[in-house]
Image (cartoon, rainbow, N blue to C red; front, side, top):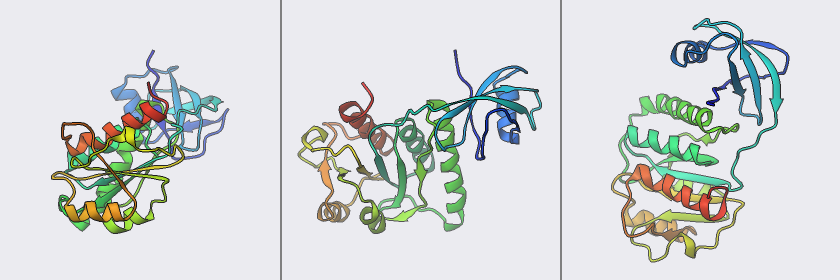
Length: 242
C-alpha cells in the first residue's frame, strides 16, 4: 500500500497536534484525496519519521496528530557528492531529482565554460526550486535526510573545496571505467559536465587536482543521465543497491 510522506521544516513530537502548511494540506486533501482518519508519514530532515493521522480535510490548513516515531534510516553507506555542470532548466531539475532518489549526499551546481547562462536575478529562485525538487524526491523515495543543495558555485572553487577521498570526473575520452578505480566508501566526489561536456582545459585542471578520469562505456550519455547513471553504478558496486 502506498505511504503518503510529507516533509515539515519544523520540530515534531509524538502526541502533539500539528497544522500543516497550505501546500502540504492542499497536496494531501485535493491532490491525493486523503480523507479524515488517513495515515500519513511526516519527517523533518533530522532523521527518522513520524506516523500521523489526518484529523480533518481542510485543503488550506489540515491538522494531524502525531502517533509514533520510528528511527528509520534509508541512507546509503556511500557519502556521494555530485558536482554538476549547470545545464538547461529541465535537465538540472531531472538530475537533482534522480540523484536525490539514488542517495546522493550533496549536489554542487557549478558554472562551466559550456554551461547555460543564468541571469543573476534568477539564481535565488533556481535555488528554491532545486531545494523543493530534492524535498519532493525524498518524500517519494523514503529518504528521511535531505541532501544539501549548494548555491551555484564557480568551477575552480568547487573542485578544490570538496574534501573527498575518491574524486571522479566523467570523460568520454578516458581509458578506464569505474571498475578500475579503487573506491573509498567514506566519501566519493563525482563531477559531471553540462551540455557539450567539459572543455579540455577543465579536464586538465581536474586531472591536476587529483580527479580520476573515467568513461562510462561506449555510449555518450546526456548531461541529465550521466550523473544519476554513475551514482547508480557506484551504489550497485559499493553501496546498497543490487
